[in-house]
Length: 249
Image 1 (tube, rainbow, N blue to C red):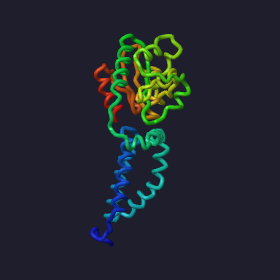
Image 2 (image 1 turned 90 degrees about the horizontal axis):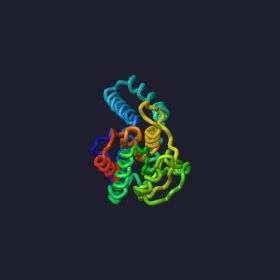
Image 3 (image 1 turned 180 degrees about the vertical axis):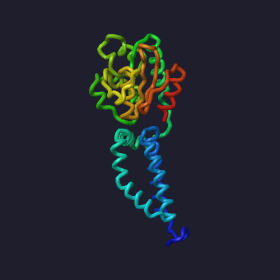
Image 4 (image 1 turned 30 degrees about the vertical axis):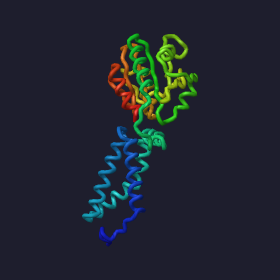
């Protein structure tokens, strides 16, 4: 058996380790906060147990774990297909190598002001910010707008009893209103105290990395959905701060 100091180590080995570490880091980043993360934690425990069993010579346990690993991958795919699909959808060169940048200040301020103004007037709304996962399928179900994001435009779209006020508005990071009146997938688990807009916000953030802003006409509150989770009610300052943090990553 080779000693550690006898194992060859050159630039190929260094590159190999760097690539594996890079991929492992981004897999963890994409599934962090999802149900699949718990499965990865459990898998890590089993791997540690497997290594210890081999070192100690627990042959029966080694045999058992080897058989478990053989089918564990399929079980994880079946149980967490929704989370895996979201993670794979989020993987792109843009999402892997993007860096913290500014340039969204005006968009953030406009969204925050509009949502808080609509909440004060008890006008319901749902605004989805497209991130790295394209939302073309959702846009096709709505009406194409292609207009600059502004308080006047958004307020007009969500004005009660207009043709588009019940659907979602999708905006991109370039500050354009791409489509309105869009129909979004509803969250699979319906919560009794959530209305259709909140379930739609949760639904779109479960299948993409988009951010959804919801204005409740009943309670006059603004909330934000991300990664299938809904925030507590937000005032202007908190909403602007959270949007700045989310859209700048």
